[in-house]
Amino acid sequence: MRRMLEKLYDMEIWPEDPYSEEGRRRYDRALEHMRKLIKHPFIKEVSKARPLRVLELCGGTGIGGVALAKALSEEGIEVDLLITDLREKALEVAKKWALEVLGREVRTRVLDARRAYEIGEMFNIVLIYGLSMAHFSPWEFTFILASSGELLQDGGIFIVDQVDIRLGILMRIGYKALVVERATEDGVVISLHAGYDVIKGTAKRLYLNLFSGERVMTDICYWGLAEIATLMWLFFKSIDFIRMEDERYFILGREPRRRITVKELEESMPPRLRIG
Image 1 (cartoon, rainbow, N blue to C red):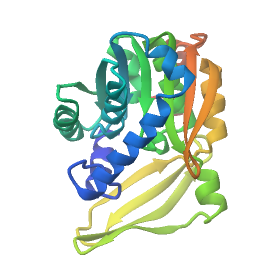
Image 2 (cartoon, rainbow, N blue to C red; image 1 turned 90 degrees about the vertical axis):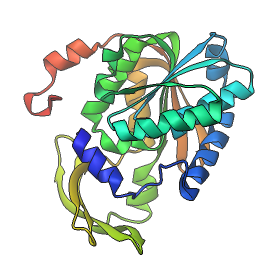
Image 3 (cartoon, one colour; image 1 turned 45 degrees about the horizontal axis):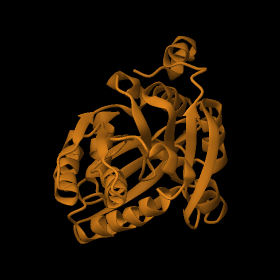
Image 4 (cartoon, helix red, strand yellow; image 1 turned 180 degrees about the vertical axis):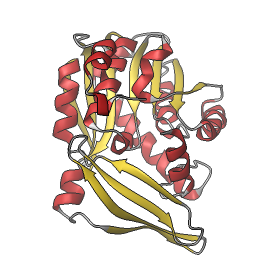
């Protein structure tokens, strides 16, 4: 999965470099989102912890995690932030960006979000920001939820940033077999439908740079908010939503149930779906 993600993000389909104009706009928007997020009662309650320990999964260049830490610091809340991702190159950017924005270093770690339990630390908040859920099937998301439940304090919060893809894309636009993902003087990247896995619930798409010939095949899950929230409800006692813009929401889960463990999931996972 690591090599696939590196190749996919190297195609620069999604702006993630906070030093670029597009990336900076994305950070500024993230900061607006986080200032709204920290007003929620769940966050106000958990923010009494000092320092507030935050784990960002699928953090990439750290735009979401740094924005959350910045918003909290504006309220005088000390944050211990750990940003994780499978891509080491992205984490190097995250470390530099965090130092410039927050005025101090943050920790980073190369990590598969599906195996977050390997961290072996406890946190007050686990965050997934930047619409990363498309990379995970429902089966894989259960591992993330179980892992997060083992890493969160009793009153801890799990937060997912997501749009309702079923509504925003499938119902309003319609599924496209061919999509122009990026078109600039430097390159044209398209994606092509290449199959659907009914067991995993994911579509296969081939991303192709027409200039360089670089290509990567990946699985995409077209999530609706309802199924994400329902799965979270099985792992957390309280669920709530914050609407940020259009179909984009924060989904919050508070207080892990810890009824289903990572070990149980690993032992009972159908063989063809086991995580390598």
